[in-house]
Length: 281
Ligand code: ACO
Ligand code: ZN
Image (cartoon, rainbow, N blue to C red; front, side, top):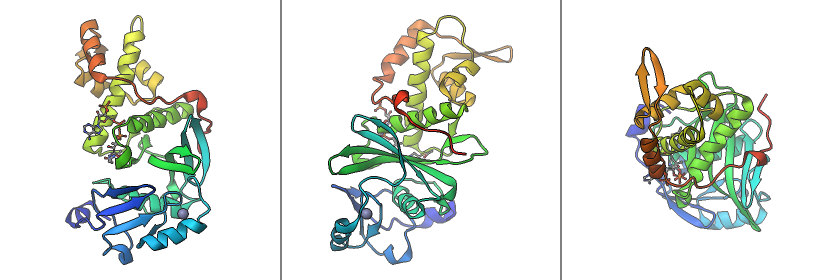
């Protein structure tokens, strides 16, 4: 689906049922033609199969054996878990997830070819199962150095810190790969806000604690944030100057303190010691 085609398409499915939530959709998503005249779709919250009628979902839920996303649980802390799903091994799940995600993602091309992607699904777990709250996708091999392709927090779970948790997780994976990374462009408004917030907090925390000189390269190595993103963040905070062909960090303590206050609380942290994962080969 090309971008210009997407703009001319009207939103089709106006709401979905997923787990205990009914959710209003935001954008068009290219569901197969037989679903295109449905106003509402019913998703199985575990395998992400979608159905036209509530009775069909009820029947499905009686025989569906999934209680969590397919794939490996690679992180658990309290009731939060992350699952890694290989799009090649779980094609239908990957495709269902893309259809679902596109309902909330504008200006993103939908990849039908899920083979080349890994999906990281964040869940809140209880005795009934692991309930998806959001996810991000990642190319198995990115020529451009992207460490994240698409990110979504489902609307009922937004603004609780899950977005920044997912972003932080994507950088923890990059650290394990010994690489720096950056999200695929373009970013949505909410995507940019979330990334700016994450980059700001992480960089300010290091600059504040650090004694002595610190270069852009060192900041990038410590955080796995690509140097361009380090520079643009520090520029927007006016903590950087360009002198004699070089970027120099000038951490005026008063300005630093003001920015740190504005950046607010850290929120949901990723505990790197709880990540059990080896890079994709
Ligand atoms: N209004 C204003 N600021 C917001 C809003 C909002 N509605 N939502 C998020 N933010 C900002 C805030 O600065 C917030 O930090 P704060 O709460 O400390 O002030 C920051 O973003 C992150 O908030 P989180 O709670 O961590 O993020 P959330 O779980 O809401 O998820 C996300 C953010 C993933 C971008 C979500 O808004 C979403 O899924 N949007 C729809 C899909 C999308 O646009 N994805 C990004 C596309 S770009 C890409 O995929 C590479
Ligand atoms: Zn199911």
